[in-house]
Image 1 (cartoon, rainbow, N blue to C red):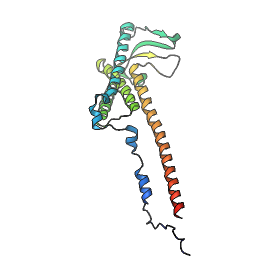
Image 2: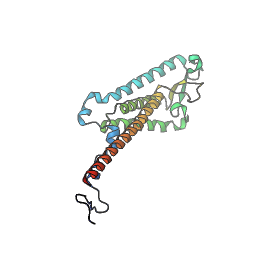
Image 3: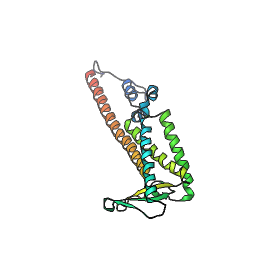
Image 4: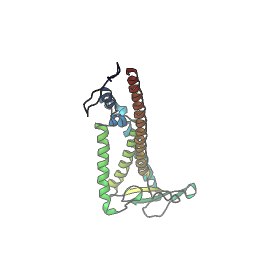
Length: 227
């Protein structure tokens, strides 16, 4: 028996896509644009676009101010002086660390490697933001915090023969060694960037599911009407 009158027979060459499928594929968002929200040329001409650098300057200023205050009040290096706050939960000390953040890899022979890495990271972040960049406020905040922390420790390394002044320790917590405001800026900034990417990824996944479900329902409705 032939097909019922009005029934549509879709003769498609294997490997080809229908117009609706092509449309669905074309509607898929550009993930780079979704996550980064790239700025336009007009955006980059506005001074307000560069507010993350102001965040970096605040982190840098606070970092350097606290280090100099500790050096002036607890120096000279090796004096053993310290201040305890919160019943000893937070201790302010004065040490010079030639390793990475939070006192890791404290090896004077490798300090030049960390200096070069800090210079490369600084140039990379600034260059990327100016050339490509993002309008996502949370990513901007995270990048500003990270940049300020990197420059704060880099300035120490350049002025102190590769060493970084560390001033804060949490002796009863046991999670960190001695650190400073710059280390905190880097850590918080990285967390902000990662959380932003993860949460946006989840949101994009939900949007794709809703969009795909709606497209499927519409296709089924058309097919039922044509039968």
